[in-house]
Length: 79
Length: 347
Image 1 (cartoon, one colour):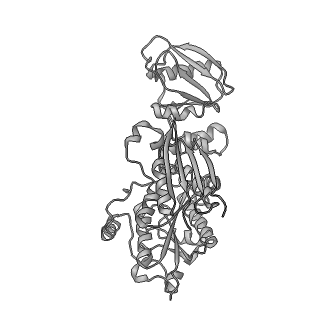
Image 2 (cartoon, one colour):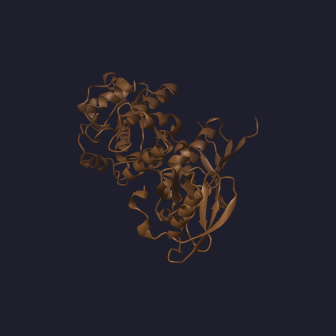
C-alpha cells in the first residue's frame, strides 16, 4: 500500500468559486486518503470549500489563517 | 430489480432548479447537480472584495442547494468557452449584454456532454414557460432542447405537463403525473411547492445571477470594447469591471478608483499590470489607470483621484504615480472640484 499523496495548491488571487473548482479538479486525480492543501486569499473559501467537501464526501482536516491567506487541508473521501 | 435512473440537474442556486431536482428525487431518480462558472456569476465576488459586505452571511447558493438536496455538485469552469457566447450570441442579447438564450443552450449542451461522459440518463432544468423574457418563453424552450442537442432528454419538471412527453416519461423512468404545469412570471406556485417540500430558506428570486443582466455592468463592458477597438475580454477585465468606481476622462484611458479598503486591497494585486496612482499626503483610494495617458493626462487623473482622497478640500494633494515597470514619481496637484467632472465620465 503506497503512502497517501499530498498536493499543494496555490489558489491565491482567485475568487470563489474558482478555488473550489481548483480543489475539485485536484481531488479528481487522487485516491481516498490523499490530501490537498489549498492556499487561498478569498475568505469565501472558509465557507465554500467545507460545503463542497460535505456534499461530495470529503473532509476538511484543517482550516487556518496565515497572514492574509487561508489554508485548508482536504482529505479525499471514498467514491 | 429496476435500474435506478440518473439525472443531471443544472443547479443555479435559485428556487426553480432546487425544486426541479427535488421533484425528480421524489420520483426515485438519482440526481447530481452541475453548476457552470462563466466569470460573470454574481456569486461571491463582491462579498469577497468589499469589506462592508463581509459582515453579511456568505454562502454559495448552488452549494447550499446541493446540500439541502443531499446531492453531489460538480462546478465546471467554462470561462474560456463562454467568451464566444458573450461575443457572438446567435440569438442576440436581452435588455443588456445578456445572451440568455445562447447561454441556456450552451449550458444544456455542456450538461449533455457531461451526462454522456458519466453514464447519466437525462438532464433536468428548473425552466418554467414564461418565467424569463428571453430564454424561458413558449417558443424558446423548444429551441433550447433542439440546439443544445439534448432534445427529449431534457426534462423540465416544473412545467413538463405543458410540454410534449420526454423520453424519460415515455420510457416510464419518471411519471408525467408527478410533473407540474407552472407557467408565467408568478412565483407563487414555486413558493407553494417549496412549502410542501418543507423548504423555507432559499435564495430570493431577484432576476439574475449574472452580471450581464446588470445595466451598469453591461455599460462598462461595452465601454471596454469600444475603448479597445475590439470585442474581447480576459478574466481580469471582467473581474475589474465589478470593482471600484470607473471614470473615463478621455477615450484612451480610464480610472478604476477603489471605493473602500477591501477594494483597495483587491486592486493592489493588479498594480504590476496597470499604471496606478496613490495619494500620499492624505488618505485616499488606490487607483488603477487602464490605458495610456500622456503626462498632462496623468496630472488630470491625479486631480480626479485627489478629489476622492481626504484632501479633497486641500489646496494641494501629493500622490505617487507608478508605471507598469514599477518606476514611480511624485506629483502635487489641486483636487478637481466635483462640478468639473462631467457626469458622462462616470461609467
